[in-house]
Length: 280
View 1 (spheres, rainbow, N blue to C red):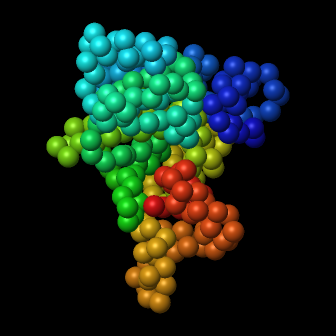
View 2: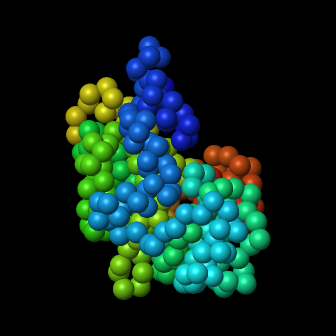
View 3: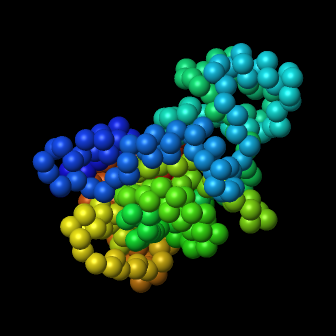
């Protein structure tokens, strides 16, 4: 079975999958990929569908942003980011007008109001607009914890049904201290941290292949809660205190310690918030 690995290969399969002469992982249609993989178009879609989204503007250059700010002052802090890049590339938080950069090495520039609070991630495996499996979690400085937020699932379901979506889809969400949420970005594809869901027993690759092969209902998984590597190492002498997911996570790290150590170094350097299974 042919699997997509990124935005480009997802769209390739969406456009030409029927012509390759081999079964391929479920993917949405090309038009859906184009809308959801563009941060500006996704923000507009959220407004149209009634999904909560921060105030969002689009500028061709920093000069345009600065001229607009003089006419209509922007509320700080705000987030600057590219329209269609992944991995957090180019995303910058700007706290004051004086901190606005002179230039950015991408265009257009998406300018979005900053949403205070915690960052959540929600992922779904879908079949013709029906959610077949889901996984949502939040990160803190000490742990990663699976969560269930019905209001997020409800909003996501509305979008998924609207497109009669096929395949995996993920959302980056911010939740304020008062419980209000804002949809920040959408990933209509495989995502960088699929291993987190796998540690919980939810292998989106295997489940999607099973859907393509016409298998039936998908099993639910237990709730996931993993402490950071530093805290896990502090409990190695008391292994009975580790839960199933934490034991699986330690096996995951030990399987290739060189790669895990490099990912931890990258994380410490601020390059990744969560890389190679390493939790901050």
